[in-house]
Image 1 (cartoon, helix red, strand yellow):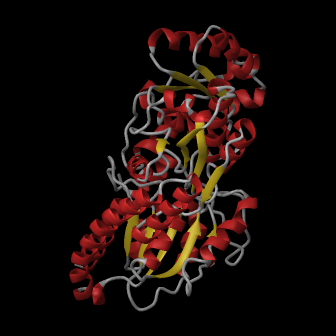
Image 2 (image 1 turned 45 degrees about the vertical axis):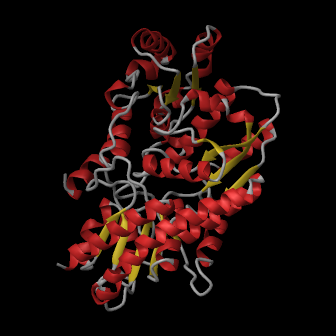
Image 3 (image 1 turned 90 degrees about the horizontal axis):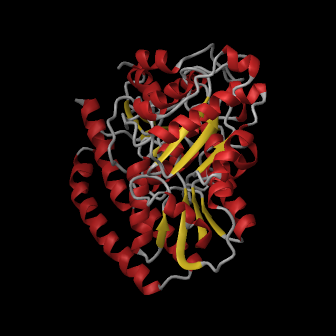
Length: 465
């Protein structure tokens, strides 16, 4: 599939244009996130959970194709893709309401599909006409069916917003109250957006490995390393919650603090590379009160292995420095953009020419994100831009000074043509990523950073050939 084909699949509109270029409109070209109902993929990411979508025809399929297929070709999983039930609401449901149709669908789903958890997600039609989804779902809950609902019509926000609504719905309607004592050394992890982040499966696997390595019992909650609903039921027993990333998951952690009295630790940057990962683990260990000797032994072992590979890599780096990129741009969601920028600057000595955050973070979180980018290193600060529209993003990049060497862009499929125009290289690190097949690849931690190095310099050498 070409970038033009993907553009047709995802849809485009008249472009938003930055105020520094021409007057801004309210349209977006080449979108970089899904609709709120795209949080159906967050449900799919929970082992043996199935979303039930109450929306118009094609809504669920478009979210799957955009977020899970033409984005690393991740597949449908247990409850995604062609499995996901949908009411396919029509004009009849607009006029008369869709409650009856949804009741019928839930009943049929329970006869045909087996799951440990069902999550009903609404689209624009039922939210606009005022369908009482709670009244539809409640009788099934009273019968003991493991089912919850979340209102995820498109006007509520994007799939990041929908993700927070889904996690809260599961916590409040399925996990329920808890008045027991916390389990020391147990942590709930809230971080990457499943499926939207192309490498979420491998990244969560590495995060769990790292935290378990320093002595924690980890509720990773999503992906192949999760124990499914058993982990979700165990959320209230955790000693604390860990939010990894600038903003996604913070709302959930604050809710858990209110609901169960659980403290949380917020680390804004994804740890990539030895320096960042070691500092991250020490901070988590101090917060959790873990055995320092065990923590330091684990870090020392990981450091030694990591730097042995780096030592061998330096032969290549010192020979080919003249043909390698010196300046870079990152275009992506806030969490990955921050982690990547820190790694590229502090580990590789590259120069950030431009960083553009595309996931539309809440206004109240933007100052924190700006502050993190201004403290990338002792002598490096980055003024981050917040922009969702690809037309504007590409105009900004065209006007960016990348120096006398070809740049390297860390972006998406939307940047492939631009990279050729700038005579640079492209590493796809986010949605949409339609030129990568991703199974369990990770770019975080010690191991993920080595994989990232391989990707960066294989791409750079190939581009210069």
